[in-house]
Length: 180
Image 1 (cartoon, rainbow, N blue to C red):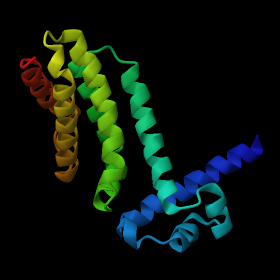
Image 2: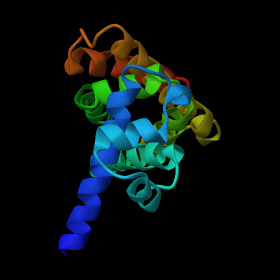
Image 3: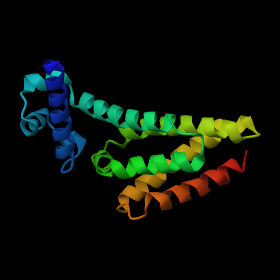
């Protein structure tokens, strides 16, 4: 399995180089030549592993969101636990998420995470609600609100604690849940 280990290492070098470069330039400014130089791999290796810079970003976002998806899937359906896991995830990955947001990649990252939150909050609200007709709308509203909170939290330097952000989100969710 040395080949698989080398493949994973090369993938990580390319992803890390891409994120490093995105700290100082937008995605549109990013060139494959720069990525390969910083990663220390040939253009052929880049194209063999990813094919495009879009594929690098997609792979990174998939890795990031799959980790979060697995974490929340294992949680009990409790608003505070979901929010705590989400803000813990944001705090742990804040630098990488900020790089994606600041380099013009919000639309690649945002929908994937929003879909995970929408799904978990839909399940949560179904377990609590009396008016099932509005659940999809309310869970969408909560998911979008959670992401707006996270983006603002990152933009302002993550000064609040995970516990403080969890409380804000729990209050927001309770207010929306009361409408059901």
